[in-house]
Image 1: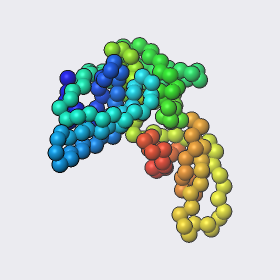
Image 2 (image 1 turned 90 degrees about the vertical axis):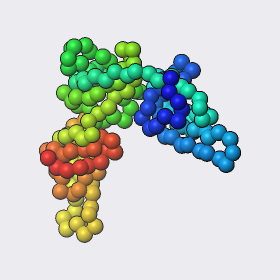
Image 3 (image 1 turned 120 degrees about the vertical axis):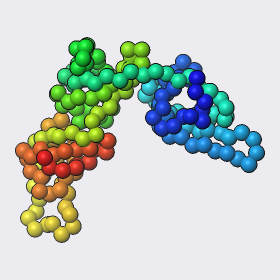
Image 4 (image 1 turned 135 degrees about the vertical axis):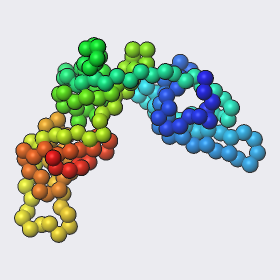
Length: 185
């Protein structure tokens, strides 16, 4: 059991037989009485967000998570298939759990999957990924006074805003957390 005062962003805990990951944390102390702890948490099974309020001194059940490095193999539309690099097990994860990260997954990319009692809960991509540009808009020559950007489409289907000098066939590095262009590789 852990005290609710120890809940911080990223902490995973069990409450009412559900698993939650803290997204946001606020500690409020009024003039008199106990402090209240307000958190925004994501239910790791239903993927819904919920706001919770606890009184100082309450406790929640901490859980032990297991992390495994896996390699992305393929997607069949509904499920994403991975391979554990050590045991060669092939866990599958639903498209809902992957969410927006799916637009940066390409075959062979290594990711980290969080497991709780052999149940996959979360997927963490590397901070940056290199992808090849397959479509690039053309830009008007001489229009460089204001740092012009354009949309390009990469091999996974994602669209990214890049500087105007990026062309079809270039390989670019993308920040997977924000979806923004980092550099040309």
